Each structure stands twice: as structure tokens, then as C-alpha cells.
Image 1 (spheres, rainbow, N blue to C red):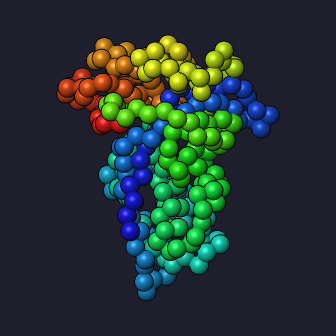
Image 2: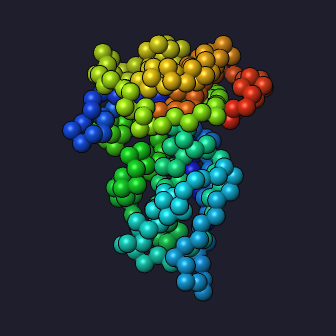
Length: 273
């Protein structure tokens, strides 16, 4: 059985306050985008292994046990009598891009195991399991536009459609530390909530729908700020960094010609929303 975990972008991101536990409260809108990984599981027979993981495409650093697809498998195995499995993961969503690629893989693994082995878990139960994997993992269970609060763990549905528009995602060869990005933020409550701004036409989002990480990240990495300006120069209706970076996206009314020439050396992906 195979599934295709998709990425998400953040439409606006306000860091509202630092919590006593050291984490930060925020508000943002998660929006699914159709750049996808591929995830397949096959039962393993006649083996002493608990699982076997093979990753293709973009490489993933670290111990396989730390991969969220493995953590998702082990999480459900604690309660259910799951067999040993081979896991095949094709990585197309860039890592460290603020697009939730790893979180999507983990959440889709929960859904895949639930369907494959007929575990009977509801979406709400799957969201509870997903929350143990990471703050933005629960979003990918229902995988619909969502307003997120708290640490990104308090989710509520929101109506917004970008259907018919095009998105160009770019990522320079720059690593942005999420921990450091948070350390440079000065939390504050915005005058107007993202929930209200998002109701405006996309053409009015520029300078109103902001990502609080941009100020400090652009100061550290001017190349990322310049890339955002270049998206607007290419005709973007709206452009922003996603999450804490380093990827950016532009929303366009028509496809961009030769994006790889516009952003040489960058990861680029373009699709219809």
C-alpha cells in the first residue's frame, strides 16, 4: 500500500508570546500544497527485524530510529499487534525548508498503518497520536486549510481556497536553525489576527500577511530576502517565507517561465493549487 504525503506552507506566522515552558505561542494558517513524497509499506516475513527503512531521493541525515515514519510505526506498535514491515520512502519535499515534509511523512504513516491493518482509528484519535510525533503533525491527518494556535497544536478549520492559482516554491542552499530563529524573535500580539487578514483577496495580502521570522532571518541571510523580492519581480501576487525557512513561495495567477533560470542553484518546484 502506498500514499503520497504532501507539504504545507504557512500563510502568515505571528509569534505572539513566549511560554513559561520555553516554547512559543503562535498563530498561522497551514495550507496544503501538492509537492509530494511517496511512502510505501510491505509486511516483512521470516525476519528478526522489527522494520526495514529505505529512503530514496533527497538524503535524510541521522539515525533511522529518529525518522518520523519509524516513530509513527513504533507508536502504534505499542498498542496494536503490528507485523514487521519494510518502509520505502521517496523524498521529494526538501528537508529543513519549513514545509513540514517530515511531519507529513509521520502523519501519513499513521494513516497508512490504520488503513492497511484496519486498526479502526478515527481522525481524532489519529490526531492525538500525531501530536506525540510533533506540533504540526496533526494538521496532516485531515490535511485541509487550518488555523493553528498555541505551539501549532490547537487546530481549527478555516475556509480559504487558492484553487486555480499557481505556486512556485524555491529553496536556496542555506540552512536556517529553527532554534536560533526562535531565539531572535521578539514576540508580540498583532493588531489584526491572521484569521481576519486571510479573508482579504490575495492581492491585498502583501505587507499585511506577514511571517515574523522574516525580519531576523533576512538580516542573517540577505540572500533569502533578495529571493523574496525576486519572486515579486517575477509577478507574484503574494510571496513569503514558509515557517522559519529557508524555503520561500510565490503565488501567481499564471505559471512562471523557466524558474530554474530565475533561481540558479536553488531547489525549485512549481504546481497548480
